[in-house]
Length: 200
Image 1: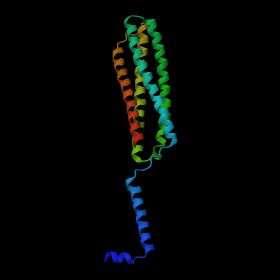
Image 2: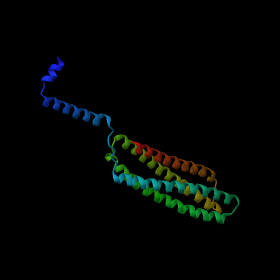
Image 3: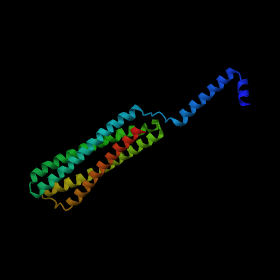
Image 4: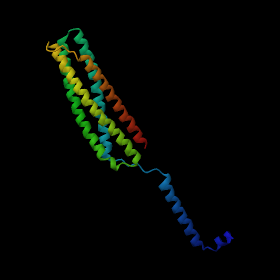
């Protein structure tokens, strides 16, 4: 009976029905089975690249400072105060450079944040937001790190010049090392999250 009904339908109508069915099937596949095409603004990509390079500079600076602190402490124990003061001056300059890098990093993160709404699919935008949050936290930890480092260097300088006893040196070194580790971890988290972003 169905075959009789089908044979009574004009050939043109059968072709039209088949065509409509194919269109509906294609729409269904495109709408529900194929993942959204990824869209990432060029400004975001450029800012991400710059942010990654600047953050790596910050990590390098903090690692170099941590190593230099060990050398300053050694010179302190050996009472080589002149050499230690030279290193302190270098560290204060390095500290200034780190602050400048933090400002540049914040500019790039702002550019990334402004472009979040243009990223698709939404899951990629979410990963980008997580990465930006990590680098924002890195800046916060860097500010704390720089504050502790400045305090320590001033105390050491005062000690070497015979003005203070340096009673907070060990405490500040511990805090500085903790912040340096946090900076490294947050930068690693940024890189890992951006790798996940690339796979979205």
